[in-house]
Length: 409
Ligand code: MLT
Image 1 (cartoon, rainbow, N blue to C red):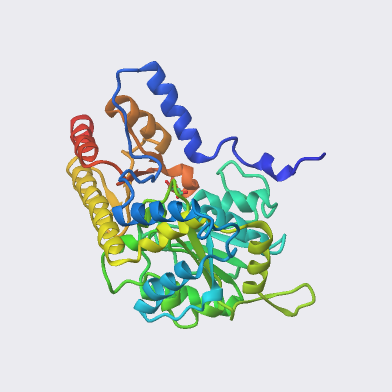
Image 2: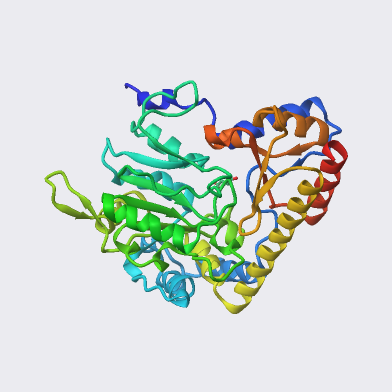
């Protein structure tokens, strides 16, 4: 068979496996180094007791003929969908219908799968730096040329996220078919205000564009006046879909559960110029290619919304945000310019003058035995920056700060 030629345009390895490979090579050569990993944003705290209890009970149900469950509804069980509607949306004054919520095995899959709904030649806009999945999945689908010497893929519209624009680029003068927006942002930790989102919703209406809003980190927003959902913005239901995840909010990176909200007002343009419903298209895709997140996992996710679940997961988020504060303060004391970490579990720092982000990765690993993520791995405009994750034990975060002060302070 002939292979999909577009894969040849991608670098050989996805960013995080590549970092893992380099760290394994380093630790093999330096077996005594006690390496602290602040690279991939992977949670470290065990699942909250309320979630564990719900999952145990669900396993017990599966052990008995009367309560055993086989295939579930592809879109998700009512008990989870109703909890999402109530706590994530109605509590913030947003009405989302049950058949607009599609429970899945996580946002990474949703963000990659969603591009199947776009025309083969759709014009895609991304912020730069950006979560690599948005770019790589569209490269795989053939919506770009091969990357140029600057690492940019012809055919994509890049929106530079810089310190000057607070890492929240404004809408461009031109249109696009789709824009991916992530707030709180991975990797920069920046958060979009109501005004920022309002401007994007107006732009999408003006250009008949779709906003793919990634809210995987919304639970880390500390200021209650900041929007957590794009559907808090008037007019967003006609132009946006929203991704949510239990990974960072409730420690589900290994359990896997998320959901996509696709409003029924959303229309794309069909082959004959007729309006087509994205909700109907996604429903067709989801029910054709996915048999639903597992019952046990969905019971665990629903437990996040119980009083105990909310209190316990809230405490975990507060714990990680205290880690973020310790890292921010420690980095600032060591002389670094730092961004993010106030409404997000990521700290975005400037590398020392004249040091590329991969050079800084090597220095940090070699001299401080710390692992982070080079900014250039998130896009050409991430060069000169570096991401540290706040997901770790308190002891490791405190030790990381001591090492940063020793090596760079
Ligand atoms: C990251 O480190 O950027 C995240 O873990 C990626 C993800 O959520 O897939």
